[in-house]
Image (cartoon, rainbow, N blue to C red; front, side, top):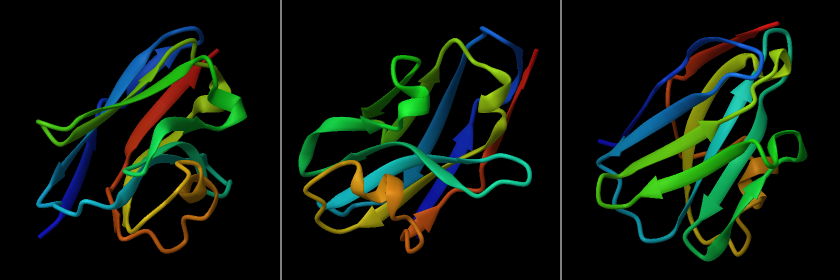
Length: 129
């Protein structure tokens, strides 16, 4: 059984940093895409950063470029999202999700994520001014 478990959320002030982690257990597919997504109160869920097994690049949405870094530890089956210089606009519940399949571009699932294969339950990030 595949499980995704996020951790690392919390409350910080503007300009602070947080490091989110997502442990993927039971996941063995060679072709996949993994993404970090967020949903702010009253807003739709949006993609934040994504990778795929077939694209060496990492995709970031414009709002987080230069501030967030997505990395993966393949040995530990853990993905992390380092978030720096946080602003109140980053306040949201953050989710990691996986879709099994071949994706030539990492950014695909960041914009088309209605049918992700697995989702975590999320971790809340609150940034105060």
